[in-house]
Amino acid sequence: MITTLIAVDGSDHSLRAVDAVCRLAAAGLAMDVHVLNVQIPVESGHVRMFVEADAIEGYYRQEGLAALAEACARLDRAGVKYTRHLAVGHVADTIAHYATQLKAGQVVMGSHGRGALRHALMGSVATDVIRRVDTAVTLVR
Image (tube, rainbow, N blue to C red):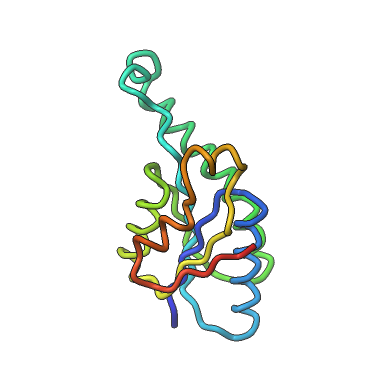
């Protein structure tokens, strides 16, 4: 059985990555599937002066669950069992951390995330993940 980590941000590309894993499962590949959403920290040193920690954590949870909703629905419809993970941090570092902790045999993710502006500002998450992990990374367009 191969441990498979799917990184999901709610974008069409990430949902196609979920669909690819569903097809692998339907073809008989035995997988221990983990689906992960990473929220980018929005706080600066001053935010905590004006917004309570519970409100910030609630925001991260709400945004993470929203990003995972369709991915989890697709896995459910396909009959694929999975474990859901929500995290906050640098996206590529966090995906790499989870891949290492889970001893993932593969990471599956969309080739592009949510929007060109984010890509221009943050660089390619997919490229950064490939550089940080020692396992197979499948990019889905």
